[in-house]
Length: 215
Image 1: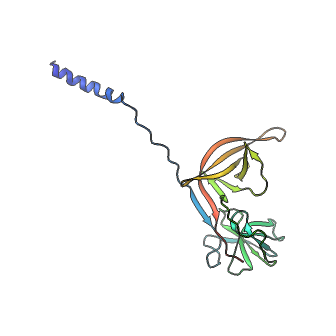
Image 2: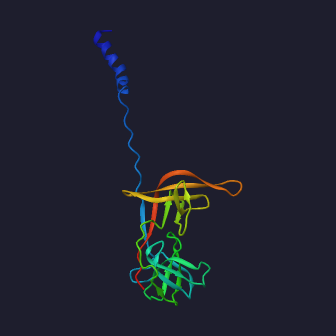
């Protein structure tokens, strides 16, 4: 074999080895998918039932106060005629004697209340910055907790997802992505409960409520 032939064979043999010995290709950084932000109301701009919603229940003898604790610029209403009693998110209809209320932002069935005991301005319209609810992944939906809460690893428990999963601390936004700290409830003998951190996860969906027209 001539010298040139031997060099050609060596080039074919060593070429791939030289390529493999170079720096490894950098893996692209994981991209967090954007969170879908849904701002909902069961009432149209003209005060009628919005498309996609159905009225499932009717109750009378209601009174309402401006300032929804879940939505802010909506109403909190009460009626002794309903087993629920207090509705935290209600919107005034075109006929201001009626409101439509939703208990959870992903629900499509609403409750219609006849406001026979009037409106009040106990707290006035407010601005609520936290989401009303959130969905992690494709199945876990979480609803904001109202009233006193206890701390989990130094963070207030803010959202209840199911009998096992809760969210603690704020649902934070960075760019187009919202993230939440997820915890699993662990029950021990003697009715003692602790929580195990599952880490921070992106929310697939967060819900807010649109402002209601005023009474």
